[in-house]
Length: 365
Image (cartoon, rainbow, N blue to C red; front, top):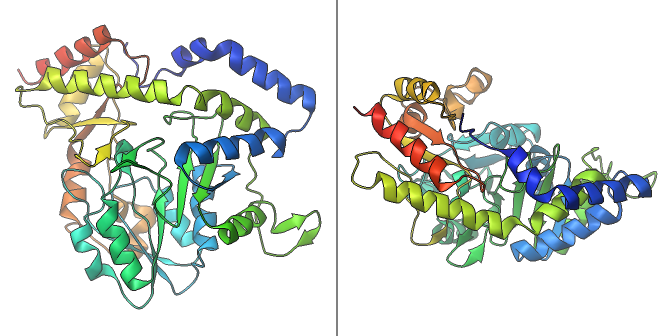
C-alpha cells in the first residue's frame, strides 16, 4: 500500500533527535509549559514572522482562545466558510457567538472575498479566513474590508504552516492566527498541540492568562480561563520538527509539481496554486464526479486516499441550528461531493507518485 501519510518514515529520519529531546524532558521532570514550550513559542514566532506566539493544547483551543481574546462573545457574529473542519465553526459557538457562513471560491477553496461584504451586519465582530489545504486565502482585499468595518481577522492556519501570501508568512497578517499541530499536519506533534500567533502584546497577555486558568501567578485568577496548556513533551518534539519543516515543505511542493506535470493534459482536475501564494500542500486534492468509484479502485490498487471534506458544515446534523440548507453554498457543496485527496507527505518518492498517477489514470478508462 502507498499510505496517505507516512509518519513512520518521518520518525525514522529524525529518530535520534526526537528521542534525545524526549529524554531531556523526562530528565527535567518539567512536563507542562516550561522552557521547552517557551523556546518553541519563540522559534515558531520567528518562523511565522510574528512578534508573539502562545502555545496551547490543540488547534481547536487556539481558535477558541483567539476568539475570546478578540472580544467575541454572545450576540456577536463571526464570518467563516462552510468548507472546513468543524473546529473552525465549533470554536465560534464555544464563545456563544453565531457563525455566519460565506461560500468558497471554486478554484482556491478559500473564502470568496467578493461575497464577504454582503455578510457583514451590525453584529459582526470578526472574520476567520481558512487557509485550506495549505493555500492562503486572498488576504489583501479581505483585510481591507475588515479594516473598513472595524473587524478582527483571525487566520485559521491549521493546514498552512509556512505558506505565504505575496511573500508574507501565514500567521503574520491577521490580528491573530491559529495553528494546529495534530500529528498529520505539516508540522505535527506526537499528540495534540496548537498555537496562536499575533503582533499584539495586549492580546498575547490575555491569551497566556486564558490558557492557564486566567492566571499570571499561581492561584491569582484574573480571568475565567481554561486548562489549555501545551505539554513540554510536545514543545520539545515540535522544536526538533520545526528545524526540518522547510526541507519537508519543499519536498511536498516537489511532489505536487510532479503530480501536476504527470496529470497535465489527462483531464484530471488538479489543485490550482494561485500566483500570490506559496502553497505548502498539506492536502493534494483532485476532483472527480465519480469519487466513490475512483476511491474504491485506488484502494484496490494499493493507493490510500482521503476526503477533505465529505460534507460541508451547514449540512452536518451538528450544525442544523445554523439555519442553512442544501443549495445555500453551491461551490462548497459541489467541492464536498468531488474532492479526493491523494497521498502527500515529504517522504513520498517519485516512484510512488508515478504509481499513484497510473492508478488514477486507470480510473478514467
